[in-house]
Image 1 (cartoon, protein in one colour):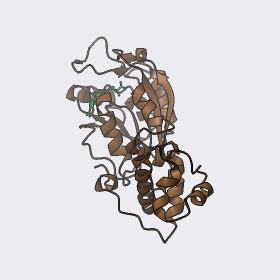
Image 2 (image 1 turned 120 degrees about the vertical axis):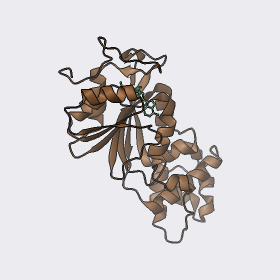
Image 3 (image 1 turned 60 degrees about the vertical axis):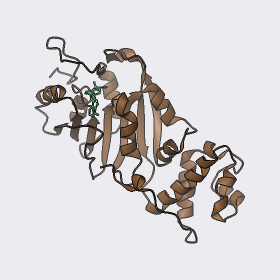
Length: 280
Ligand SMILES: C[S@@+](CC[C@H](N)C(=O)[O-])C[C@H]1O[C@@H](n2cnc3c(N)ncnc32)[C@H](O)[C@@H]1O
């Protein structure tokens, strides 16, 4: 392994790359990514699409327990050779879309393949039973913009953003990958907001459904079904009652849901199965 532990595409022994994989070729960016996830030796971290280890290697040096998931058997072999000296890294030949997610609290640090970004985010962020705590990801620029927009464009992203802080850290120009892709990427961080609360999650889903059913209608109409005084309720929770429902920050809906979950006079329908499961 090179002294800095980074895995650039090897020039002397080229790896077949028929699928046009874009390897990260900027060690500084991999370091920043790992640093932004605050990884400590007690963490369990998954690197999805580990490739030749550009991110796995700096992750290994944190001393955390690392699961490096990679679908391509050629990369799996190269990765195993390269990281053989690290007892804290397990290279797992698997598809990120079906790999069994850890049951205990975990973090993800990865440059995830563009083609599976949505499927992976759905597995990590949608189920209330997901044990994901935080993530630092390299994703396609447009995807990062959609996820971190102040006004989520649909119910699914609002559900993610209400329970996780989704922050666009910086743009990563295409030239930092080899071969360079057509579009730029982004460093995106994900952090769970507060502790999971089953009843508050049910309240949140009900509120978001109401808000995104008529996204341009004032927020007060979205909460009218509760049978509480909408103006007073929203104002007391820092939400402008006249604001279009879909422009209310997802974190504000989450705070309102926690407040309402304490109201024993209200009953919340169970979550759909896809939102309850643990993504496994
Ligand atoms: C963008 S490259 C990133 C490689 C490496 N992490 C890096 O930063 O240089 C994506 C990697 O994901 C792998 N991959 C693609 N689809 C996958 C899937 N469904 N499950 C697991 N790995 C996948 C590819 O083989 C490739 O190694």
